[in-house]
Image (tube, rainbow, N blue to C red; front, side):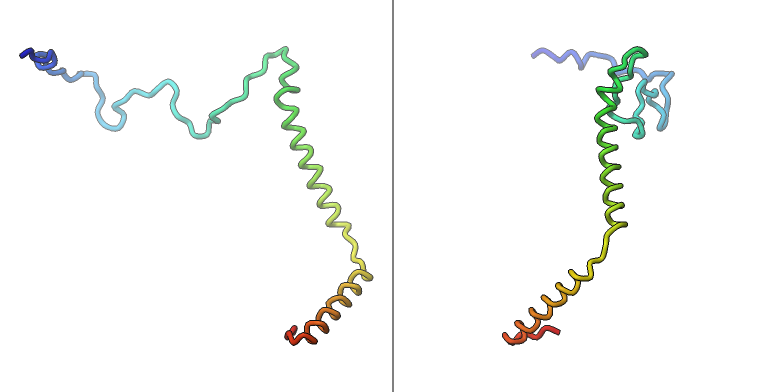
Length: 109
């Protein structure tokens, strides 16, 4: 029966330059930084004017549209007018509904 070649190999010798403790592994070339974004946009060339159009224009369009919507919402909330006639009409409808519910035996107070 043949013997595996690993049985005849001498045991590995400890490296005299090996470090001990938590820093026993050398730092990697690309250390993990959680603050660094995973996907980065390509860096524009100095003479590439289409970079602004292709990558940044859709983003600025979205930001501008959102700012417009927020401004419109704020303006309409600030200039919202009370309509006294609509209030009186609504209160009249509530009274009619209360009378109808009392006629059917429902307690509405």
